[in-house]
Length: 274
Ligand SMILES: [Zn+2]
Ligand SMILES: [Zn+2]
Image (cartoon, rainbow, N blue to C red):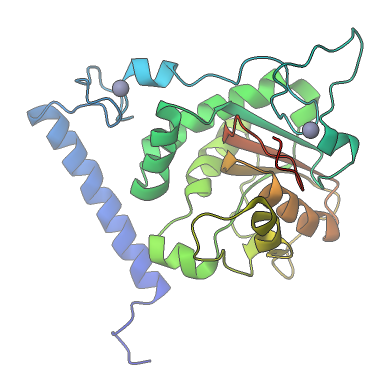
């Protein structure tokens, strides 16, 4: 490949840093001269927050109502548990998942769907930092159950990350690690098989597309660690499960999944009822 025709990773990173700096400068100028609207509802933004979403939209992000599975966090709408009964969804009764626990900040609906898209496709770092604060609150609210030694983002395939220029999960996991005073290991896990290009995958295809798709980087230290695995959305749990299997195989003591959003309609593996 001819030198200069394809920018190297270093050049890309430098270009990214310059772009980030310019974006920071222009953000500041724009907010002084042109009052901005909320990126979700267009209401005029007041205050000095760099999160481009208004207070009403931010406060509309709420957990799914009702009780949830103690292991995977799946909303269990309509369940009426007996006192003292451990709340486990059918998938967790069947020990479906390789992760020990999964928790999320809020239900994947309404304005949160738009906010996740902004994070995913526009790399809005202040929004990532805001979500990271919420995720840190989820972790501390769970006490020991979510205690971890290291924070790891769910990785994109190398090709996908190169095209996009960043991994949206790392926009969450990096500030979260900082907040929790834990090491952040952005390259401990890698996605070795890309997601199929097809946008809508059936439940079965979703599980199939991630099976064996992740591996730990050779030489990385995972032994006996409690890994906090971070992603933007938990839909079926298949991705977290596949990552957890790779981490477990490499000797991780436990794997805890943490996502900003949680699908409310949460299909069970091998079922069309949920
Ligand atoms: Zn708004
Ligand atoms: Zn469950």
